[in-house]
Image 1: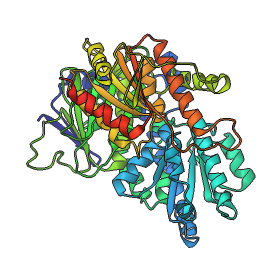
Image 2 (image 1 turned 45 degrees about the horizontal axis):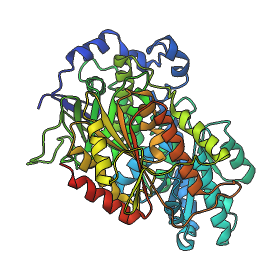
Image 3 (image 1 turned 135 degrees about the vertical axis):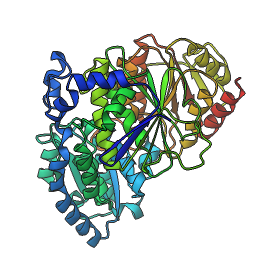
Image 4 (image 1 turned 180 degrees about the vertical axis):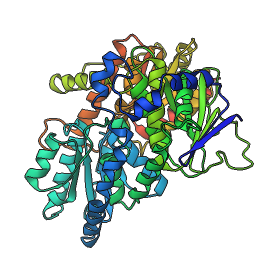
Amino acid sequence: MGKMEAAGGLAVTTGVDVNAAVDRLKADDVPARVAAKDATLWGPEAEAEAAIRLGWVDTFVQSKELVEPLAKLRADFAEQGIDHIALAGMGGSSLAPEVISRTLDLGISILDTTDPGQIVAELGEASLRRTAVVVSSKSGSTVETDSQRRAFEAAFKGVGVEDSAKRFVFVTDPGSALEKLANEQGSHLFLADANVGGRYSALTAFGLVPTALAGADVAELIEQAEEFATTIQSEGDNPALVLGAVIAAKPTITIADDGTGVVGLGDWAEQLIAESLGKDGKGTLPVVLEGPAAAGAGGADRVYATVGGSSTGLPTGSALAMPDVVVNGPLGAQFLAWELATAYAGYLIGIDPFNQPNVTESKENTNRILADGLPEERPHAVDGAVEIYGSHADTVAGALGEVLTNADREDAYIAVLAYLDRIDDAAVAGLRAELAERTGAPVTWGWGPRFLHSTGQFHKGGRQTGVFVQLTGEVGEDLVIPGRDYTFAGLQAAQAAGDRQALESRERPLVRFHLTDRKHGINQLLHAVRELS
């Protein structure tokens, strides 16, 4: 396939010619400067932010202090019959725990949604009585996380759980409103490394607290990262350096699990890459694939990467297309390698990898809509169980055809943004692969509102060539948010509308399909896309 660089328990093998980029990184002494936490590395405009965002380079040292208290708290919960962990968090607070949970089969319930159906499903009396809730937010004020905390608090009281404050474990930065609340009500509290941004926080309390409480051996993850950290300044094989050059090599990187032991790393890497590199009108677009055989993996405009836990990449005898880069090694090493690589890619592209200048835009739109009410919108057409907005077509198939036509231009990509229940409505995610089979453009998928904390930055701040499909749906059972004058359905609708406004202000093509009946609407969408040539 190409050259392999292996060190610190992780191997990167690639056929992409990145020798010039690697030589530049070495000549500019970038690895040593990252290891030294040199905040000047990405230029004067990035220096202030970088100065308080480089703790991830060695945060695993501080994280060792978490191991013993987490083991004690897990044992205390077990004595009380608490054996299930629900995580209320968004973006960097949920994506790393999700990878760890899926890889180690921990069964954590990840609540990074405002869809009322998905939240109601977690509030049944039988499960509540054996559940502890980890509430994770750097700022302590994330609207989705705060709303979920309020819902759980009311639900615990509703089923008569005594001293429900002790069912909550708060993970936050020092000085946040969540720290204050934890101290006031006597909830468990773990403070994270304040010098680590959310998307780089996999090996801090944000990644380790919920997973340790669910049974993960987080000491092993820390050891894996510590071993890989010895390679940062290596003059010999330096896997992260090669991976960084690969990420910066082309406009898009597609990522798939290779089936050898690491599950779902692409979803975490998607946020890391998109939010770090998608700004200033440029950057690398990450696309998470369903598997190694998924549609849209390869192309002249993209690098195709597979990720796994073995040292050999794709399983022996695999008939799948050969990827451009194979990244294999244990999960702790993977986290640090991709963080380093993203910082290196930012240097090569000329981007500050630590700020997120466009993330707040949709949030501000959402807050305004919650205060003023939803904008009045009428569908252009209704086709069965689907209302069509932002299209000239009268059928779902016709509107999807318009999407493909709009994407038939240089550097375009398609983003499907689904404000639905990613558990009960999971089948609709098949739309990504179906569209990818019918276009030469990259096609990315995002569940709302979680993508607002990841690819949402790229869509607003990266290259302005996106073609957008937004999916919304009628709600069956809504849920009140205690202490707020809106419900979860109202919040979800406001987030979708706020995001539409942010994208439409950039004059990007956007078609919205509103499902008046979710099950039938999803079937319609999938049937319609399969009709297209």
